[in-house]
Length: 213
Image 1 (cartoon, rainbow, N blue to C red):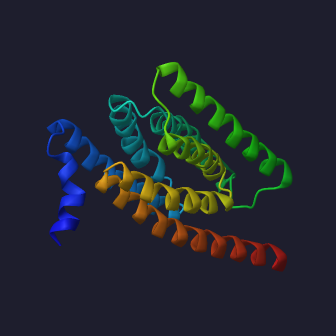
Image 2: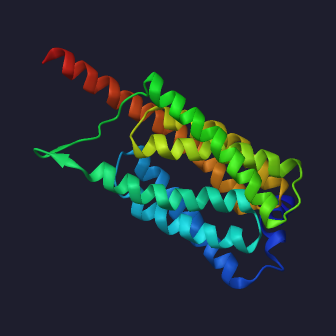
């Protein structure tokens, strides 16, 4: 039990108090935002913005540029997603849950490659030494960026990407000694699986209703 306690809290002993407080706030708001996303509730975006803006500051402070860029993009896409999810026509939401078509898949793949390339050059431009964990960070950044775009457009596949990237991120953050964030992404993984099942059920239900009309 002591080893578990030390894993989660030892790295915070010499950390500035305000950073610990901010990380704790981002932790709870981040989990709340994923739960709202699973419920297809638009509060995912204002709640998520709190978490991502705080996390941008923390990662910039720690010079983790891939993670910082990922959360900066989350913040921008949260504003877009907030607007997109709220759009209505004749009292009906314009953007329903759907699957990606071939064109959207290719766009997502392009975003994945472009994000990795940009993140790599940001690391190089910032003068940060790139080790194996940074390359994993660059890879997951590409997945996360694409997942966020898919989610903003209510594509079911966003959950598949979240699950893959979350599973990779759990041991990555544990390796870096970030017990709180590692635990957060473990929770993200569980909620993302639940989100996929909930959205798939909703999509199947809407398709059945459309066929019977």
